[in-house]
Image (cartoon, rainbow, N blue to C red; front, side, top):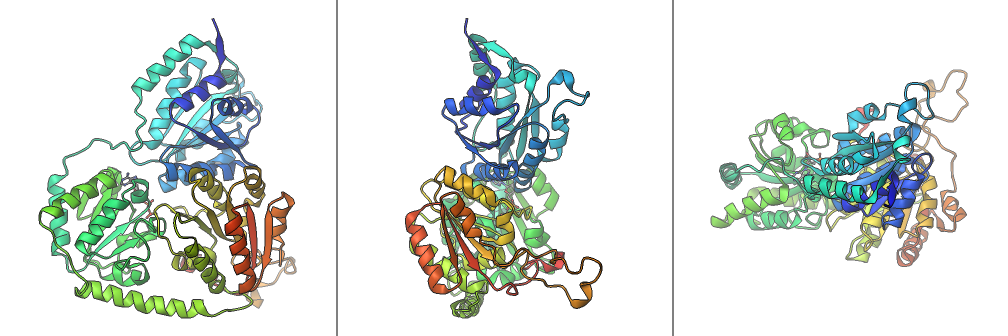
Length: 568
Ligand code: ADP
């Protein structure tokens, strides 16, 4: 009777769960697991650092709605991977971290890389399982993968001790265990926790929208995850209600749509009387839905897959369910008795007027060719080069303080799920991992990262990974010589025995980041003028090869902490 080993059984279980990609760093005791996975047709993207690989897995889960899988070694590998797992938890993206762990019999005696990993991951995992015997593997894999995607998606964890990885099992028994696990666990892309009859709440929600004087539709990355773009567009266009996307909701309906309130954000949220919020939490990104940013009388209608989220926010009305399904119900209810605000509605006019004024103000800043570069001039040039690409639009990866802030206002998103940024957790250093995830998850799209030098250097060595897998990723580094740029201390702060050290915010000025890419055979550009940047973008967008464009920025342009100074 033929036997298979635990590594092959894990790989088979993952494959049966629909896993086609894994991200990670191999080493003791998981190298064989990666190799077995590859032999079964799973693409393994090998990183330099688990942190980056984890960020990649989290974004991959968001983009594909299949849990992103991160593989790490035991102990420190697992701890490094927590960065990615926590990012998935905070963003509500499905991800499973798989870590090897020390031998069970030696736990507690100071074994190699010993750690209670199930306890270490607990704050960031919805569900976790440790296989204590080879026969438990299929059940553990199916349970954890289905748990990551169920209800509100999030982080999940699988633990395989080294001694279990060395066990074998008969092929017949393995097949029976796989079949049993497959039968027991649902692996649907979206699992609603109990579908309730929402008819009455839908009716009330539509009535509220119909009678509102200043209604607004807000949507976020939960709606993007739900693939609710068609239903959202239909709702906006049939009712004429202005809309506001959150940063990663951008593109569900094109930023160029005439009902987009993005450029009139303060007016829209400050004055709306009814806000339908779809797949977006009323957290710090939306000012907790409270004054002074929002009116104290605003009535919120929340659509969220998580009942707990709705209970937490106590909205006027809550619709717990998948955004695509719930918006379908709302559209159906409206269709029976349609209403539309129309262009001359005072609220629509006010938003449109304010948007035009703000766009004109921004354009006046953008059209100046400021050299040495500020943030606006190169961002305009990038915006125009991206727009010229047409469809399919590239995935834009954005991080950094000023670079992300300015990029959010200037770069235009026209297609869903084409923006990845620091997200709910404000995580910096995600850029390279996100680029790699986007390139493998959306192979039809170019990936363009617009990053501050600080964000880039968290994981700059992953440019080698880009070259190794020949990924079509253009990384544009806004190089202003540090975190927030130059030394911004006042003279009285520069005292003490280490006053001659560089400022905590400073890096080596003029760092040649493009040569890091060249070191591995990728393409590097150093640019400091509009013509140089335009030429580098034209060439690199056409070549679709791993590229770093190192853009020299005035170290004193921009503000400390971007637009988050009040939190500093
Ligand atoms: P943003 O950062 O864009 O504001 P958040 O991450 O704060 O978005 O919120 C996303 C919300 O979407 C979460 O509360 C999550 O529970 C919810 N969500 C996830 N999947 C779905 C879905 N299929 N349908 C509706 N809501 C969803």
